[in-house]
Length: 177
Image (cartoon, rainbow, N blue to C red; front, side):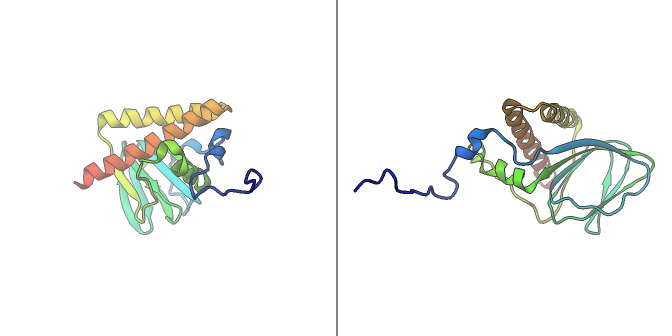
């Protein structure tokens, strides 16, 4: 019996051909925003990373208030509803990652050892000085990588996103312990 023409499905997560295309399903969006007045309620259908660069204020997430100052960072899953309320002027860097891209990152073979997931509660932490500069640099590098449309820069963007998520998670765990 010749099996060469028989369809042999790969096990769940075993097919790696998709990753050879070097494509991010939906490009993440990185933007700097300045708030001088309270925002409307918002939520993003994916993962949203928010990093406070200047000013003070609060971010209300699902009726829970997080006081923000430079160095505060939040990771919100798709089921969180938020509102930004600045004290005077609040400047943030925001990265929005679609669920397609997030799941792509989790399924990528180089990420098999990472323990990332969507948290029920928002992840909130305040970074210390050396970590603040590193996070700002990662946001800048991510924005630069996403501005270039190539397979190489897509791979760089995925690695930077993974680094951002890992650092935020590590710092949040450090504060909890």
